Amino acid sequence: MQITRLPITEITRGSLAPSDGGAVVLGTLSNRDGRVFWYDTDGGRHYETGGMLAVYVPTVRIHAYGQDRNGKRHALLPQVEKETPRGVCADSQGEELAVWESGTALAGVTCGGCRLSIGLVGTYGKRESNGI
Ligand SMILES: [Zn+2]
Image: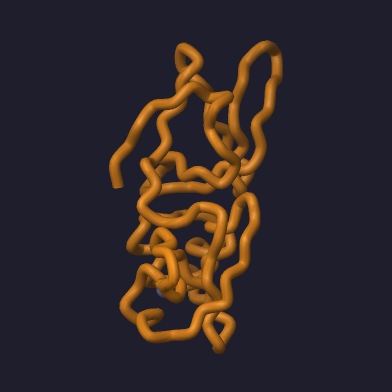
């Protein structure tokens, strides 16, 4: 994924920001001691530099995920009109996906293949790497 720099106040909740080893989901815009920053969904902070913050250019839907019939949640490719929702990973192809939308939808992606594809690190990834 490509990185771009945007004015921190124009970034949308749910956007992906670079972090150690991958991308994290931005959750809440905050302001402390005159400095503006985003909290990611794991509680990490992302401070502006000259009013700007680096985020990834989205190649997936950032405000929705697709749940398959086994309850696994996949990241979704951009919506194509009149086509059924498609997940990112090979396992989700041909699966019927129920679309769930939220401000920080990508934080809820549980599919390891999808998380790997979009470089998503964070709570679910940590749990999987611990074998839980
Ligand atoms: Zn997947």
